Image (cartoon, rainbow, N blue to C red; front, side):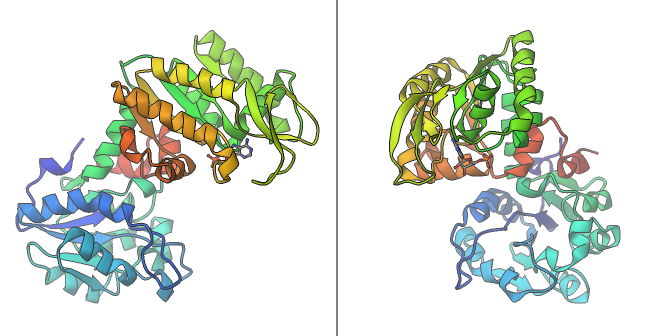
Length: 395
Ligand code: AMP
């Protein structure tokens, strides 16, 4: 596995695929620069070696060229965060981009215009990838968030750098964190899967059954399992076409000696609203007209015990509707348990869009071992797939 530290970038132009797909407000100001900060170590290492950085990224899902998706809006933020003057070129291929890249001196940074202004990017077009490849001497992929896409700049481009391609420091760390969970010797290994739908996580569950000792199934997903086992779940979220599959997963888990932990109680509400009436109820005795929106106190205690005995912990998906204050406490309690276990030496990885949002919102970011930057990429890795962007560097 070739990483940044296998190269000396002195007098070299590094063509780096970063994930600068950051949120912008109505005034086109960056509202969360986490993704830019995450790319900083890679950029700094290359500049300190005496090389220069050509940064390429997508921003949003533009239809053709649309000013509001221009990467020029984030250039000053990059400059602030990296602390180095940053140039911008309003194209990513062609004469103008080639000239800007050719004129770049050691220690300088150039940002290319949004890759997705060209439909060839998402189509994985070979000619477009070849044009991009002309801009740099060494290709660095540091964009985990798009590593599951076989796009021109994330995958196809790598073939034009047979010897001179590597993972950036962020992508290297992401790969190592996932390996640390899926290939860990530090047992027990626990996976916590929450969120809304079982259907979006079936392949993950099936893949990790061979790798973990315990699985907590929480959030909306749990009700499909409870109903499949004959429980009454009232109006809670359920996928009726997945009941058989839920039973099959429980059977597979038993055969593989994996303990599946399903909540025993729930905070139920008479409407999907923060202002709804609520009460605590056994999870399999929810009356009609009521729905489970958070893990109850017995479940929190039960999950705390499982978390505390685990040495390796993966968390994907909230335990309740954490966006509403009154149904966030189960997710917060779980975050506290994971923070405590981490403090005692467990390795904890949090990944997947909503759990990352929850971790940030409730201040657990610094209390877990690693927070992944990729939602879809993380899920596909957990499904056991080799991501195209990763495979292209390894080939
Ligand atoms: P996912 O993207 O599958 O991880 O799902 C995240 C979403 O699941 C969040 O928006 C939560 O509000 C939602 N969620 C978690 N628990 C429940 C529940 N008991 N009922 C309905 N939605 C839930």
